[in-house]
Length: 129
Image (cartoon, rainbow, N blue to C red; front, top):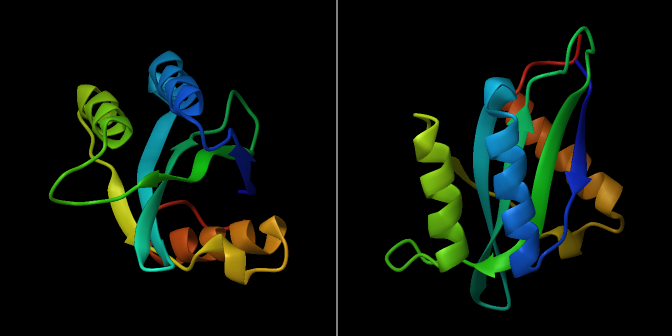
């Protein structure tokens, strides 16, 4: 099953868009992710959600707000709290995964291939058929 990241952006409004995608596609919900990375001694997070394919399609979209949220487990940001609450309303929990920062990759396409590899390796998303 092919998967592809669809980047929404890093801003506050983009998180609201991600939350609306989750709410309006609750029957397609597959898995939510909080992807943490460190750059210049600061831990930041990306919020992402994988949806099941629509209809007979074999395509799995993974919507992401990339690296725009400061991450602190003891004191989560408002955006992180909103994301986790939205996922909990579906009776699910977001998976927290520590990853490399996207800046070490020469292209964002390589970064997203790296993420798909990690997600498949840990069986968070299905293998490519």
